[in-house]
Image (cartoon, rainbow, N blue to C red; front, side, top):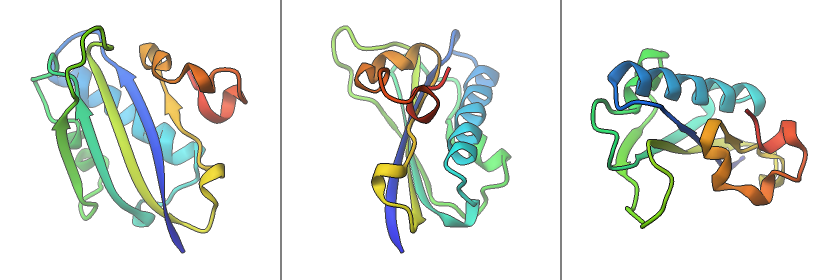
Length: 129
């Protein structure tokens, strides 16, 4: 069994604890449902947030979802001039028999702008709204 990466991102409208947790839960749920991932197959998750999101750690959402034994880490996204604001990004590493090419990456709300190269591919596979 190999370790595969699944990317995801979502934006929030406001820097509020509930907004950050809700958006993160929505993104994580979509990532695991679309990719048919079992929580016990998640090796680890790295969350990054833009500097304008300071009210809560996105990893709290995973803990509230019952991911008690999954290694989680939060970090700040690199502040690049002109980059997307109020964005939560996820790198989920999963143990899977599927090849990397079958992993479906999830970009929601304004985060769809992060991967325009995927927008012309199978919409349901990579570029969900």
